[in-house]
Length: 448
Image (cartoon, rainbow, N blue to C red):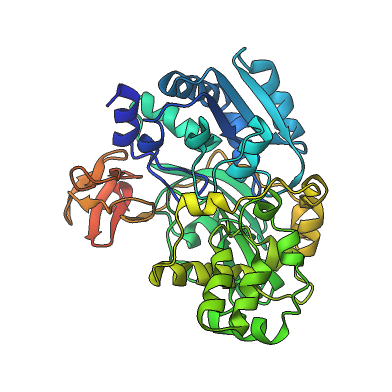
């Protein structure tokens, strides 16, 4: 294991732009091209732009370290066209072996399948990974964390944006394990009576109404919305409701498929056929259901394309689960055999981010930027989850009453398992050890 790979593992670095895949595994492979993803797809999020504007040198040095590690001769830093402030800031600082890629202002421009195709002209094999075409893709925050790991600094904070029904939208580095309630205090008053949180972005994020929940290494945004907002209603819809209404109302117009980004790239995904499977049983239903597997869950079908306001995305998600349970999951080779040429209308069917924001009812929030918050009061407590990313669960190595310093290892994965250690994000005393580890800030320990 190389020095950088080992340092990244010991620092606990996981992907900040998705499911939290342990980064040491990805950077142990070879690649010809490194793509730093700063396209920032989700409406209202601003964290990637703040990384590139406030930590430019570290991020670029992280790219150089990664290129050396994987043997890449070409580095590409991807932005959306609208990110002119970031582009103007970074462009004069680029070394000769790193170039800019300006993506269109469409959703989901930051999807790694889209990025790889736009940068290289090659498609990742259906069901495959960027490394299959000699490419390594990392979110810019992850690359910053990799640079930090090279300096022996563990991952203790995450960059996130707070926006929506709050007095002061902001973006900041916050300690992992900080509660949603404490995070929202930094944004001032909440301006609606029955707020809920969309964690991770309005398109692909999840609904949370428990404000005691803690942020994790993969938390990218907390968007405060009224409980009756359209996007909240759709995301809160039960599986049985999605299927019942879909079965009764889907008229097979095919717009969900015709607007699907993965379908337009030629992958074997057709949401309208998955919706049709709700009407059938037996072999016919199973055959139609197979068209769900390549779904990226981007939510274009549900929140943009469907004229009936049905929920093809959630039906596809449930169908993918069922395919696995019924041993109908197809191999990469089977999926690749069904791949078609890139659709000749793909260029004209991108979903403009500005129009998507209006469609989602978010235009009034988009008028305010979630600017950088550099100084804030540290939380009095954190509750750090031991299973918030892909890979093996870390096991505690501390007990109640132990004193820990920010950066100390508090849990480690099983030997030889794919996983990373977990570190204390604040200095204090351990007050609980279980599925999460609670730490009380040191200055609050007196008399307790």
